[in-house]
Length: 179
Image 1 (cartoon, rainbow, N blue to C red):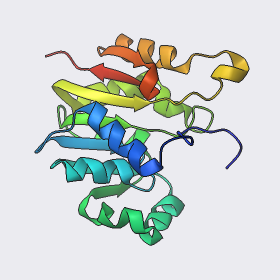
Image 2 (image 1 turned 30 degrees about the vertical axis):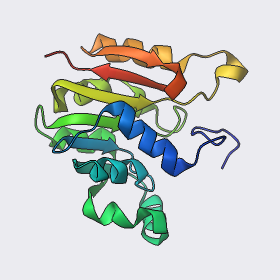
Image 3 (image 1 turned 180 degrees about the vertical axis):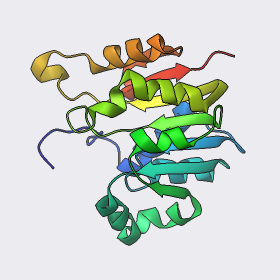
């Protein structure tokens, strides 16, 4: 919308991109999955289609309204969607509640708190030992300012206990909670 592309826009549809994220995360049947930042719900729907039980958090009522009218989002009704600020809502979940977390936040300039050590500490808390986190980072700012957002994300995730690595091909940081 503002000229900064957070998501892939060349060579892949948003639907296929979401399917790929869920595959890379390794979602399996009966997994409990937390999808942070629902958007139109594509990643939540793909996790659901793999047999997972999905809870998703979305702050924007406008985005949730768009999803109601989007034919690709119809299955979102089978997902537990919480309308609220993920930074606050995450505190309502018990320890070790989820097997997988898919975190696809808005860009850093719009939602810096979702890239914070405090938020990552909460993600670590709600993830079961042996669980995995897919944190989409995209590549905004890399070409213009030389920033390596992914490297900073991996370092902050590591500082709260995750074993994290940058996966450039997927524009993400993949992290695991040790057993």
